[in-house]
Image (cartoon, rainbow, N blue to C red; front, side, top):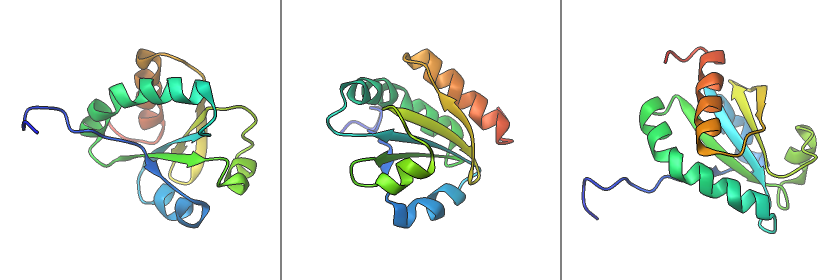
Length: 123
């Protein structure tokens, strides 16, 4: 792979066993709750994958980008009141602070910046 190419960045899969550790290992976290059969989840995954490399390099480990498969981790979905898929929640430390309701790359990027600001990460 050419060094100038953007490296592929993906949201990290997390289970209930590792959720608390992952969520508390960073000032902020963005957690996507999804299922493999969910078409809107696949659409949002495409949106996120296009902007994630830039977000990762901008925030350099200050924000965790995580995903939870609700088919495998039902108790986590229940804990956070997930009623529709996909649902994306922004966390400040271990506290959920805001849900993403947009659909576009621009809306997602703006939302991540807002989560970062609310978590005290300087822009």
